[in-house]
Image 1 (cartoon, one colour):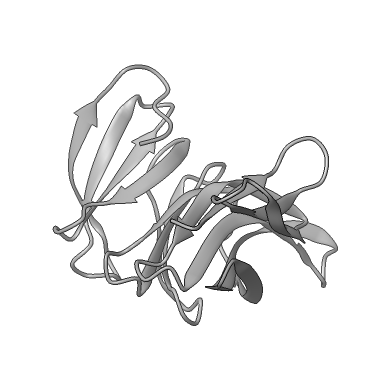
Image 2: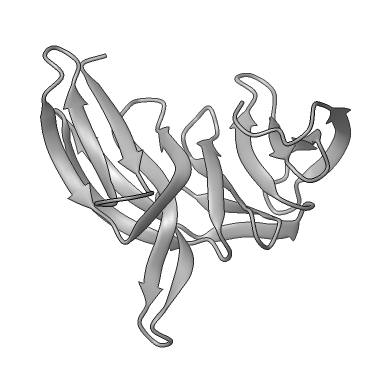
Length: 178
């Protein structure tokens, strides 16, 4: 690819940064209130989604969010902020790019969102400390790492309004990225 995108969510300036792969130069820095581990491009590369928190204007407190951006020729434009209550961690998109799956670490939920509008198809408790989620490339299944349980939970997502856990895969302690 021509570009890489990184998030910085710890010390220093929190931002989404676009880099040129041709020369390594920073092309754009988009400051954000906070960011976490979730970062995913749409299959066609025209949209980017990142997990973090935004400021709730009514309570003046952080609230979980997915930030939506359009992406064109190395430039990001923020197009939306979608609610994802809790501490949103990993996120992924369906292979067609229409659906976002995001897990929240503190509450232990899976949120299923419309990628274009942010509308919530469903939210459900899934277990303690979910960290990351990936979508199977051809099946209607997602895989979620659950740190506290040391498992990968497999969900059938044929029905976006009610993802169904079909199995658990035991793994080593504290699974994170996949």
